[in-house]
Each structure stands twice: as structure tokens, then as C-alpha cells.
Image (cartoon, rainbow, N blue to C red; front, side, top):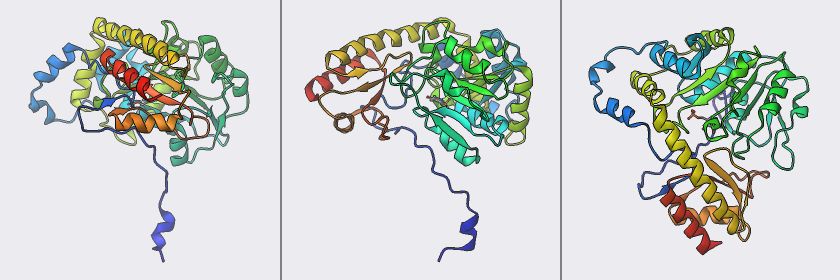
Length: 353
Ligand SMILES: *Cc1c(COP(=O)(O)O)cnc(C)c1O
């Protein structure tokens, strides 16, 4: 017999993130972190951080960080919302904007946190199939809905939708909020982002993160860009939930990161170069590799099952990600690490596949 209060528990199936092993020798290619680390300017500031700054509550508005991001992207501070990683920003957006009786839409292969937030917040949703090449078809999003969200590039496919496709979806859905999750956009071709379209469409929110391209997953910084009105609505919800979201070190170090663009761009280029090399090596081994615009590849082995390669790689100290669902079970998601790490992966695969 279970207690009566059991009937009133909000039961959820939580999101499962990739493992964070403690063994330093593991080649960790399972959570799409950037292996190069943040700018040396961030290191310098961290080295000289005086613990006295921890005495006081942080700036609720994270003003320095918001202003630095606004300046970097050419927006007003009122057009930027910052949160504890983009997961927090996305959760706040779900809460703020997805309150219709109609279902929200997102692709059937996508970031697996979306259905978790929808369940948690009791938002109805419908997943929309990708085409055979794993592309988003804008026609499929021209249906009544309570909101739309998708990552661009998509995860875990790594495939980029063109600006035309993204704009088509935004323009055909002026009655609902469209969220474009640009977690990996810095690894895509220049000009792929739609942040500029937030000026043209009042129903668009673009979400970014420090966790992938800025190599600062541990600090938990994400942000949204949209028009002032939408940002105000998100802030109202945030201040009604937890006002002090951003901690002082995150504000200071997050600000320093955007101020060193040269380092940032250099490391992005290095990752893109490694990605091209690694993709060719996988193809030589017979893998099917989806065209990647991100810092990971989604690849399907030829001679062994993805599950077998996943397990054997793990035994060999190489962690990648495997999603056992019917649509993704033939693929592995492999983060692009350092050159020497990726060479070891290729050597391992040559021996195993
Ligand atoms: C990694 C990721 C996020 C979350 O990143 P944070 O670490 O919470 O900023 C959001 N969306 C997608 C598609 C991601 O891959």
C-alpha cells in the first residue's frame, strides 16, 4: 500500500545527460564540450578572483554580461536574457510562451530535453518527422500549433537548416512563438544564424550557449536574443521563480569570454578542420556520416552495429554517445576533440570495425 500523498507527486522521467567520468585518461567525446578551454583572459581573471566577491548576492540583472553580449551581437541589452546554461533559458521560454491549448511542435529526432520540459510543464506536443536525409521540412510546420522549437544545427544529427528554411517556418507561424536553439551555430558556415531576424519577426527567439563553442560548460551560461517585449516576458517569469540565477564568477568570466574574439574564432576554426579530417577518415572506414555543421558528427558504422562500437569504445576508454531509440539506434554521436584524441579514435576504429 502506498501513501495517499503518492497520488499527488509530480512524476517525471528526467532527461539523461552524457556521463561525466572522473578518470582523466578517458577520451571524452560524449557531451559536445570544446576541448580547447576558454580564453586565456578568462583564466587570468579566474586566477585573480578575490573570494570577497562571494559575500554579496550577485547582480540580479547580470548587467555586465548582458551588456557585453549585447555589444558583441549588435543588440540592445533589453534584447538579451541570460540564464544558467541554455537549458535554463529554454525551460524559462517553455514556461513563458508555451501556454496554448494547441500542441507545440518539434522534430522527431532532436534534443531530448524538449519532451522532458513539455511533460514537466504539462504542455501538449507533437513530434514532426524529418525527411529521409534528416532535414527539417518547413511545410510540416504549417499546421495549427502552440509554439515551435528546433535546434539549428539540429542535434544529434548535426545537420544545418538553411536560413530560407528557418525563415519560412518563422514567417508561416506569426501567431505562435518560434524558438531556434542555436547551441551549435558557431560551428556552422558564417551567415547561418537568424539572430538578425529577431528584428523582422516579433515571434522569434534565438537561444545560444557558452557550453559548446565557448568551452565553458562548467560555468553554466546561456542566453536568448529576441525583441524587448519577449525578453521582458521571460524576465518577469524568471523573477517570479528565482531572481539570483547567474552567480558572480559566471558574470565576470562570461563577460571576459566575449571580449576575446580572436581566441574564440581560432579555436572554432581548429575544431572545424579536425571535423573535416575526422569525417573523411570515418568515410574511409565505411561509416555513413551525416554532413556536420556542429562540433560533433552523427555517424553509422558499416561492419558492426552502433551499439557494439559504443560498448567496445567505452572499454577502450573512448566515450561517445549512443541513443538507443528506433530512429537513432544505428548512429553514434561523436564529439570533435583534439587532433590527437581523434587520431586515437580512428586507430581504435581501424582495429575494431
Ligand atoms: C547542449 C545543448 C543545450 C544545453 O546547453 P547548456 O549547457 O544548458 O547551455 C541546449 N540545446 C542543445 C541542442 C544542446 O545540444
